[in-house]
Structure formats: structure tokens, C-alpha cells
Length: 295
Image (tube, rainbow, N blue to C red; front, top):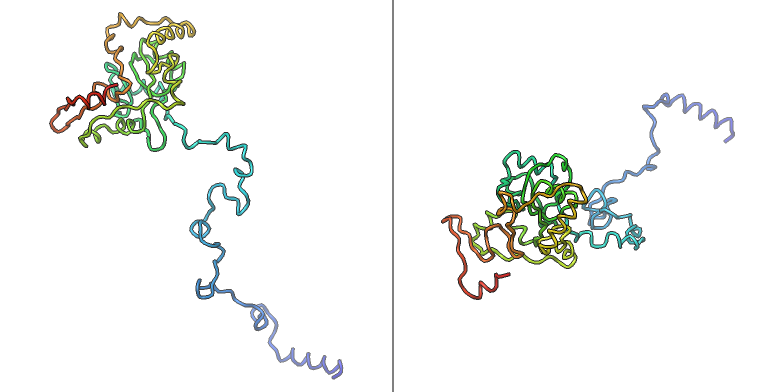
């Protein structure tokens, strides 16, 4: 067939075919295969979700995952020295002097009695979580210029400026350690007393905390009282204030009250059982129990 005949045949076909438009444009039959979602064990695939694990069960990858690469925290082992044991470090949720003054002004805290962790938690405005390595109060110096209350307070961590602020007003401050079991008791004493259990002994601080809680500089509860008296004078000279004489204070007895190193609550000894229903206290009389609960 010559080229002239081919041309004529093509022209005749164009005359018989409909006008070309967007409405009649089509792909050639079989040129496009529609991908259908498979049915897993019936021939399907993982649909881009990978094979088990977090890739199928989450829409985001876990923290630190680098899509199969060696993670940064494993490529740089020198960084491990900085973060080593970070999940085991003790935390102390902060309570500022400004917040403490506000609690006192609102009569949420009774300053005629010694203040400890239990009395602060009782206000309902401070909480901590012993199961998350939180070990009590960190009293911060925010509001030190407006703090005017004279208190006898026991907290777990404090700076030198906070100690100076408390003692400048004629108060007494002590830093004390509580083990996790004791912290659960202080967080909710009523729940523990309703269980009818004997008050346990407070454990001694771990080796890495012994230095702080035996330091007279930080008013540790295991420090020598004579050294604490000397440190009180040194701190007053350093900050330039006159140290009030506690001996002539009308609240001298209250300011001198101290817990035993094994004691958890003020006025309640280890081994005692508090009966809230009958409003009574049961004290052990057996010699073995007395020896066990003694300091």
C-alpha cells in the first residue's frame, strides 16, 4: 500500500471518528494496572508498615530511632558519661519561700508547730511522686526578700541563701532524708494509719547523700549540733545580719524540737500503731520489738 493510500485511509478514519476532546481521551487497554490493597495472608504485603514492632503499631518512631542507622547515643559513647544513671538520680520538687509565705498568710500552715513534709503536703498545694524518684521538698530562694515568718521547718534540700533567710527571721531549718517507703507514708498518712500497720523506722541516707545530711553547713539532721551553732554564726557574719538569740525566744521549746534519725512523724515513734477509729495509739511492750525499733 502506497503512502498516498495510507494518507487517504487515515483521513477517512478521522472523518468517521468523533471529534477529539478531553471527554473521549482514554488510555490504551491494559496499559494501566490498578494496585489493590492486599489481604495479608492471601497475597497482600505489609502496606509500608514494616514487619511487626513499632512500625506497624505506631504512626511515629520511638525516640532516638534513626530508621535503621546506628543511633547517635550509641555512635558517641562519650556522651554516656554525662547521662549515665540519669533515671536513678533523686529529684526534689521545688517550693519557693514566696509560696511558703503565702501558705502561712492563708493559715494553711501552723507556724506554732514544727513544719515538715507531712504538714506541707496536708495543705493540698504541694505534691510529690516517690515512685518517680522524687524525694521531698527543695526550698528555693524565690521570694527571700519578702519572707518574714519565723518557722521551724524540716525540708530535704536547701541552698545557703535559703538557710540565711530562715535564720535571719529567728527560725530554725533542718535538711533531712527520707527513704521511698517513708515518703509514701508522709504523702498520705491517713491511708497508712487506716491499714493498721506499725510505723516503720526511717532508713539512713545512701552513701552519695551522707555528706550532705551530715554537713553542719547545710543543717543536716545528722550533723553535730555544736558545729551547727558555729555555722549559724559564720553565716550571719557572711550575710551581715544579727543572729537572733533562740535561747530567749518565747517559742524556744518549739524551735528546739528535733526528730530522731529513725523517726518519720513528729510526736509518733517507730513501732506505734495509730487507731483512727478508736482515736488511740498502741505502743509495743515486747523487749524484742523495743530493741528493733530503737535507734
